[in-house]
Image 1 (cartoon, rainbow, N blue to C red):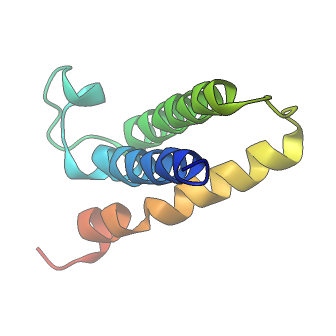
Image 2: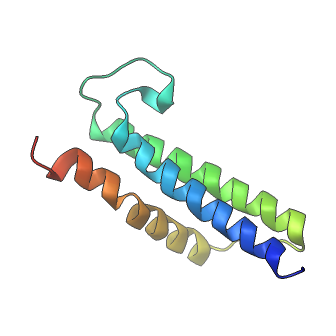
Length: 101
């Protein structure tokens, strides 16, 4: 089944991205294992979000290399990828900052 291999890689990258994009807003530890910050500042959350976005991009590149030829990385891809990560992080942001406590 040649069409099934790219499908699992896309689903894997999307699921990992959704999980890692929301983790900075669902957790008060720095990078999940660091010291507990109560309340953690938005700066730390953004640093974590950008770091996790980079990790998922690396995962995507590794899977792309495993499946075939790696396409060139241009600034348009980076801009779209950051917008996708910001969109996928929206539920965690809403849960952390916009819901009534």
